[in-house]
Image 1 (cartoon, rainbow, N blue to C red):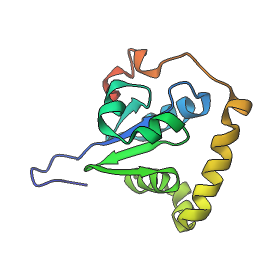
Image 2 (tube, rainbow, N blue to C red):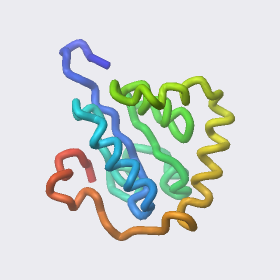
Image 3 (cartoon, one colour):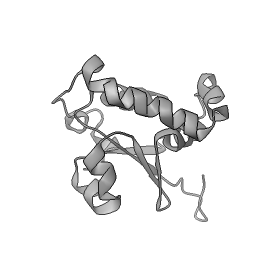
Length: 136
């Protein structure tokens, strides 16, 4: 995405900062996002409270994408990520899954993620190497 000033438009990915699976996913995206297209912010942070619907913060059950003042969750959020990262070719097949089915799969994983992966108190945004990719 390019705006009129030819500057890339940043997409903010809000995530559950206490979720080990979410933190792993964010680290994976940071490695794949070689053009620094995405910024990241915890759902528990101040920016989330100011920028997105409180129900997403209360539930903590999905990545929340904020792009051009539009909000995307669950399957739609995954598709935004895949569409905007050039080097995720292997995952392009996910784009063909209808959103209701992808949402269902996302919800199932979301409901068991703490049981399987656990919770973490490790804040990614406190990591000096990653600090510039986060908005708190």
